[in-house]
Length: 178
Image (cartoon, rainbow, N blue to C red; front, side, top):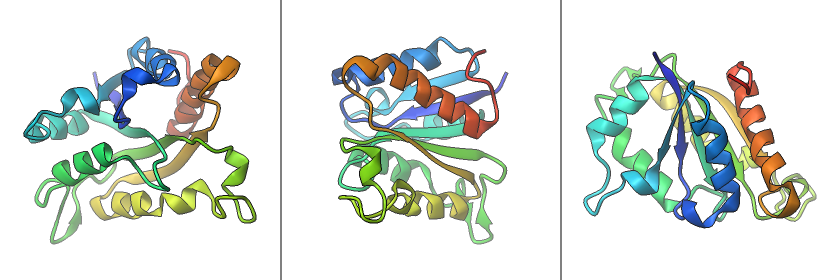
């Protein structure tokens, strides 16, 4: 049975209470396969065929990561650089992942309200993720956009982790409950 693939691109997943709750919401759902990049990376990098096979077997791919300096963490960038290879992800005719769906899920250290014209971050989250939208188009993914939360600490942590799953599932057109 094909599953939705959730890639956790945080370089320090064990240090995040939010990620612990967030990942648990997906691991308790048989429709999802959760891959934590920190656990997949070795001293020589990522196992290319294993990572590509996980994407090939997936109904959709969701990349979850914290916003680092208006982009993704280096761990996730290294993963993308290693797996999106010529001949598998793209070739001279264009994308080879046609029909796969891609969603981005991000957490921010600043309030979401600051990610808008006139806010302290001046632009929307989607603007800062245009490179992912363009990469997705280049390799043939159907990019559904980003979902974001800034409630990663304190008493809203459990609710925020669940709300993020609900938002991801909404983008994928499925119920958040199995």
